[in-house]
Amino acid sequence: MAFTLDIGDAAPDFSLPGTDGGTHALADFDDDVLVVFFTCNHCPFVTGSDEDTRKIADDSAPKGVRFVAINSNSANTHASDSFEGMVQRMNEHAFPWTYLHDASQDVARAYGALRTPHFYVFDKARKLVYTGRAVDTPRDATQATTHELRDALNDVLAGKPVRTPKTNPIGCNVKWDGKDAHWMPAEACDIA
Image (tube, rainbow, N blue to C red; front, side):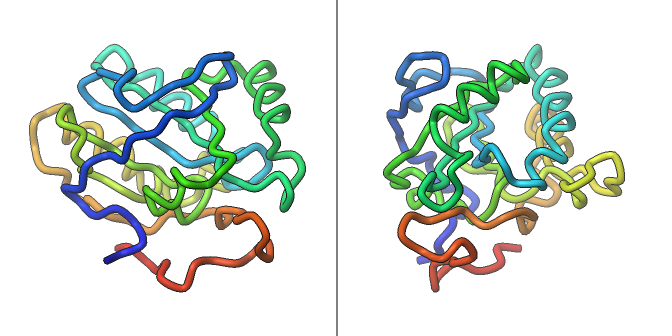
């Protein structure tokens, strides 16, 4: 079995605390399209593309698309990825998504999150239709020449198959607890 979810796989369930003070499960999001993405507080690929991700989320929300961000990074590996840091980041930036904390890293393992950011797009039936990056230059999204996440959402919303359903996410690796900061699971590999 591949480390990362494959196209057509069902979205794994979760129940995670959010920076809004609530606990959120997969079933809480009944939008037509759900984007689950793994992110963090410090990665330059995340911070370099946050505003592009915000624009995509804002543009697609009226069309029935919801974004849910999950931070699975170990605060033992990078202290700024603590839950307190998440709350501070949301207070500072007011992102238009729900920001959840996966302290056990079980959700990251269930999805097969490789990097930050790593996007998963699920249709109404919560089947995976796209996985990978948002753009080809997340460290500076203003320089992007491809826009795979936006393209995938446009395809899904138009009722068409996603033209490029898999791309390799570009970013820092997920910071796994008790491992070197650059460690990746042996079964993790390129997905495209």
